[in-house]
Length: 534
Image 1 (spheres, rainbow, N blue to C red):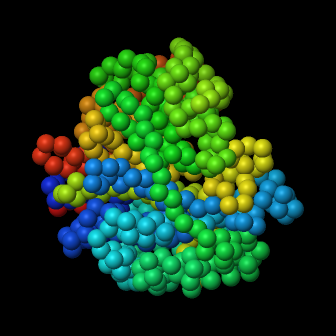
Image 2: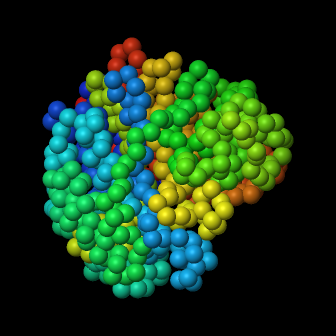
């Protein structure tokens, strides 16, 4: 039986609930969050439970050794958490050049930065949660210990990752990855039960110590020893001195709504810049050729500016306010004509990832995202722990003069971004679309689907997507309207149809009715997505 063979069209509908909703890319993780809600936890506890569970039930996209960001609405205010890690103190461009590197590598210890996800769970629980981590991480521990059957899309990406890693990872430092994620010399098949007792033990240690063991205890010692054994840069003091940052979210107004993102080093500002550009155009009630053309052009310009200016905030040579100013948006908007352009950065005025959303009946709402980057990440698993280390440092620029140039204790340009929507200071809800550089593009399309085209949460996610790749190249989904694709091609866009929806991100949405408190949720049809509701 082929669990990836779908010869007939199918349909999801919006899920409604009153007491709580958890929307994730994995049914088991969504249920883990709901289980915690029913035990007396709030939306923050549910998000932590789902996030920890996702490191087990979707290891192809995230892990304990990854980063995280969150937007939390509680007590009438929106809070931002940046739990991305910095580069080790000992690393530098010069140090990598001495080892023969001419660019940032994908695999091994060079792109490994300090993982922030465990710190995110602990910080969220301490500030806003009701339940101890021992309770919220219990479902994840159980799945890691007892195993679970691999779901269809997960199995597809696991097999793909194994093929890539089998070719790319040759040194002895990668042996633990194969032992953990390819037992028996292959990826687990769809429907086959996979377990990781080491993963369970690590999650239990994190839960019992509120993540202290990961940064300043037994797990930190194992990570540092593994790094030292193979000439890595990550050291015990890099872990010990790390703390996640509470940050002020940034926003732009769009047709009566406020769209919120985490400030740089994340690329959420790219989505906001594109939305700012689109706010100056009249948009019809149904997306037409001109709207698609303008969306793509706005996204190109926003990315050109993001790649030029986004970095660790301490190193940026312009501020988020300058990039989000109306004068800058107007200048960039004026550059959009009838033909596809090749984007270049403007001059602002001076002045593989999982996403989940959770909400409870009390009005608490969480937009949360975590990732190992590029699938399983660096290819390194700390022996005896199940900790797959991410390769987020691959996003650094190999140029000391660039704002995003690699430097010690610096955070890289980050692709993962949670989003949140409000209207007149009232929460509408969390949204997000994961998937590398697709994420700001998904945010723009989902927000316009919701606000401009009046689509319900599920339809806003179902709508066919496009993805700007580079230059004038635009990838579109197989079911993208052909007449629009042909018209875009006549405008100079190099339109290419994808074989499936895999490259176009995976999202979740929860909207809250301000009058009734009813929650309406949609989940991603491009993955094993699920909404657990109560």
